[in-house]
Amino acid sequence: MLADSDTRWKWGALTAQRIAPGASVDGLLLRGRATPTARQLGEVGVRAATLREVTAAEFLRAADRDTYDVVVLSCVGGTVQAMLHGLAHRHGGADGRRPVTVTGYVGVVYEKLADGLLLRHGADVVLANSAYDAERFRAVYEGVGADAGSVVECALPFLGGAPYEKSEERPHTVVFAVQPSVPAGRADREYLLRRAAGHARRHPDREVLVKLRSKPGEHTTHIEEQPYQKLAARLPGGLPDNCRLVYGHMGEVLDRTDLLVTVSSTAALEALHRGIPTAILTDLGIREALGNHHFLGSGCLASWDQLDEGLLPEADPEWTARQGVVADGSYEAAFDAARDRVAELAARATLPPITPYYTLATAPGYLPGVLARHGLDPSGAPGPDAAADRPASGLRRAVRAAVRDAARGAYRHGVQRVAPVIRRMGEL
Image 1 (spheres, rainbow, N blue to C red):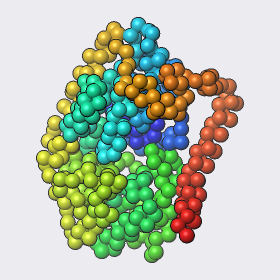
Image 2 (image 1 turned 30 degrees about the vertical axis):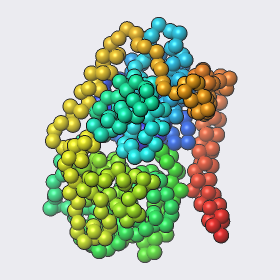
Image 3 (image 1 turned 120 degrees about the vertical axis):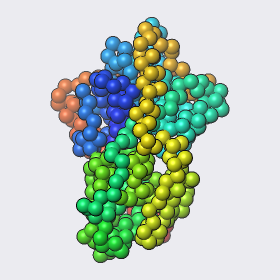
Image 4 (image 1 turned 135 degrees about the vertical axis):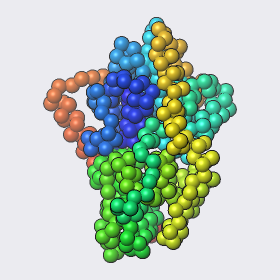
């Protein structure tokens, strides 16, 4: 399983276990700015048989049928496309003995539907997390004349947990699940934090938890320009005693949640699956840029004012069923089709060539750039710099690791400190 961030590790590792129960899962972390830390990996609660950091070239050298039966590509769309072309180049002249390729999305697909889907085309199996997504995915592929047979409906692999029951043994607990980049602006993020703190002051008998994604210095799928930890430290009056910042496994946090509040986090689907009252905030508008438009028709759209007055939204059962987050016992069966498809493909002695929709004929002005970002030439072959990715001595590995860590730190510093200052100067 190849992943390039904390959330994609979570989706990929759990998907691998769902579609190939009992199989040994080797974890490969694609080297980059978002490579997760040991703490982030541990928070997911999934253990891989082996775990190592690799470059694109190292992955392509290792991905053969003698090593892996199935490869789950749990990466951003451009990376998936590059790996598919790299695998196609490597196995193009072989005897068809190659791993089965599986990919998909880590959560709600509310933006870049066509872009992301076409970058994933070419995989043997493209997983759709709901009936709604499966219909949209097939429509995109068929709309460009591409084969849509790879689309297989399943569900998000990390749903589960005990159905919600109100407990009288603990305070009513409200969890505000934050997101690294939604909203992006400091004023909007300060507003949401201020409202969460205000809800706690208005309801001193409740506990309000601000669920954070990462600790300072850690890397995520999206870099936070304005971390809530820093905003909380500067909040006038600070956080009340019954409002605090928390980390940890989302499933464990949901075990004590009576109301989940978010802008558009996938945590909303986890809560809805359990039957936990869930509020999708409308305070900043219902906008595509925020992703909360995905929840139109859900019955969950609400503002902090309404929540302050005691509203507990009730989700529309037809909407949740279409989104694959029903709590009626059918969840485990949602992976049957994917398991059957993967098992059938893995049992074949040979597989057909990997044929992505994007080629030098269909996207000559786009594809080369996608491949070049991962060190591949337009044919999918590793470029001349790939030799630098070959195994190095212990000292060279240590030096490279130190340089990578410094570069990641510089990138984060630039995003969180320098970029906001430049933007403010430009507004003067």
